[in-house]
Picture 1: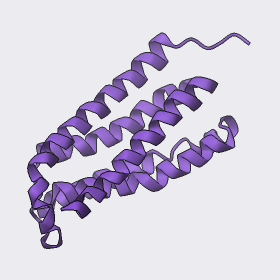
Picture 2: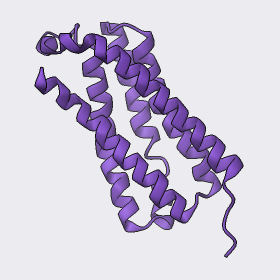
Picture 3: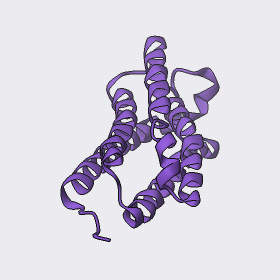
Length: 163
């Protein structure tokens, strides 16, 4: 049972890194329009993966669909890196690299928790199945609220500083 909690590590890493990226780097440098639009799209790609988990049972077909959604999310989040190298400090670029490494681990961990009753090698996780449902609803809610924050704050509240 204790080993199953290791699957939560990518969620913790994601939360800490996103917090630092958003509330330190983004606030410090501000976001150009392409990021104010692109970042909520990145968050939406994760939200779609979580929404799939909370709305569909784990089955052979649904694992394939989830895998496709995850692959699309992993490709989508890298879309801005060609431009980020021009506007981000090196430490922020490093943090992005950590996020890119963690992203597939987070989605894989989510899939493992979601499918814990389906995969024989994960039978030890069945004791956390009820907690998993609550956890994913919480993750889905948090991700959706974060996306709304990104849209509202950066596009309607934040004003560029006059230099």
